[in-house]
Amino acid sequence: MFINTFICRSLPKSNARLIAKISKRLRYFAAKILFKKCGRNVNIERGANFGGGSKLEIGDNSGIGVNCEVPYNN
Image (cartoon, rainbow, N blue to C red; front, side, top):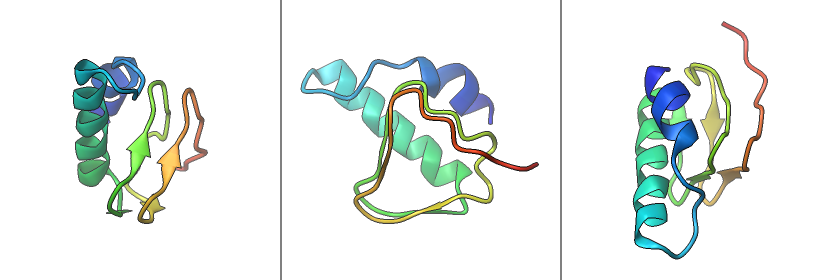
């Protein structure tokens, strides 16, 4: 949860620049660790909030948008 809350949420948005591509990969890596299931080619944008994510499942070719709030229960 620390990774998403304090690091990944503040990385730049995904676009064509090198820094943004690195940010996109870091957010994807965090999702792979945090989520119950995380498919391939998933894009998590800047500011997305999904809590701990331990109960979330996201499929291939999916995304969570900029500043999106995914409801969660602890």
